[in-house]
Length: 363
Image (cartoon, rainbow, N blue to C red):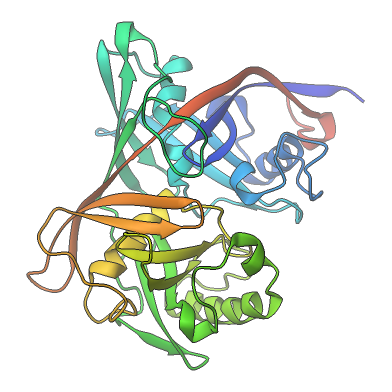
């Protein structure tokens, strides 16, 4: 049977990687689009052996870009999370790690011209409506991937990409605290349901009978822990106004513990059915905001840093992630913006092939 060729870039963004497409090169219909992305990634096999996925949720992410019609934005960033084994595609969330590849990829694809020195790209995350400013190093008008910036979870160093997230409180649910409460009790466990760049259900590790310092493998092997977290997550999804989240990756889940490596607070983040090997960029903003908010489940786990903006250092399985949070407390926690420095790299460019029956109506 014939195959369909689709042009693509293959990018690492932060601690994730995946194909980057021009939205116009893919099906407009959402069901057909899902079929094409499932075939491209190879969803349905633990190793994604028949596609370019890497057998992990951080390597089955898809980015789709187009010029934006929004007055503020340059680029529309449409994200898809493809499951590793279940042949499912979730278009609800966004991904902050792959977001770091959007600026470089948009320049490489000719969607925005490069400036001399640094190119500022205004990005609209169409899944959530979030607005992000990315600053990409472009000496001589060419994307520079080499540099001295390390990020935990990625070997070596690369050129820094500065990302500033604007208006991200309540980006998916319309409220910083979607349930209206600083804490809710579900299955006898206190949780904070917060929405900053990503809706996350946050709890104390100790309340689930773990330390919060376990390795990813240790946590992933604890099936009882995941069953308990999923029960809480499903109920929290309803309370947050997200409906039935049985097949959705949002809300995500996070556990907190006191820092033990010089950071602000220790974290373990779940995607939600597997432990993240490091930390998601979007969720980092939510967890940092929770850590700064009195009355949440973070109470008693840290000495809250004073002043604004303030750097919150999150300890995760691969090291740490720093989140610069600009906020005020005039009437409870009010987030102005959150920023991070990440890196990205172009890995490959060319044509990706999918079976013709994945897109039968293609002309």
